[in-house]
Length: 185
Image (cartoon, rainbow, N blue to C red; front, side):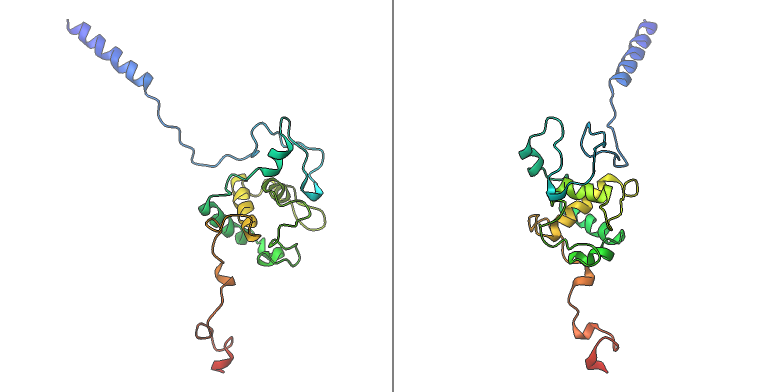
């Protein structure tokens, strides 16, 4: 009798252990292609006018209306803002107003203002100045930067767009030091 009970308990314990499926946790964002099934191979990374070649099975309306994964995520856009300045994008694009690099405050861009076009520009680079960041920035961070860049030109809802960075805020005369404030000289 004791043997039967201990065998039943043992079989029940084994069944419970086998049936228990732990949650799957992912501590790092996956890197690689943002589009499932995309091998990343294309004939040319350059697509002037914003018309990238269609992926297999993709219609033209799907290609033009596709949003990036962080388009409506305010936290990701704010993270993209931090990354934009951390990776020194402002060094060429001058806070979005243009300088060495083209301005980002309008939606008329040479290679297109759609999220995938901006992503490709960051990953592949462009001739005459824009370096390639392939393998240097994780893909999820590239998409966060894409969302922030689109917010610079007003392409995101105002509820998602981040506030201006501290270096763009207007300083009051009393906040300035004696060298910066002509009233204290």
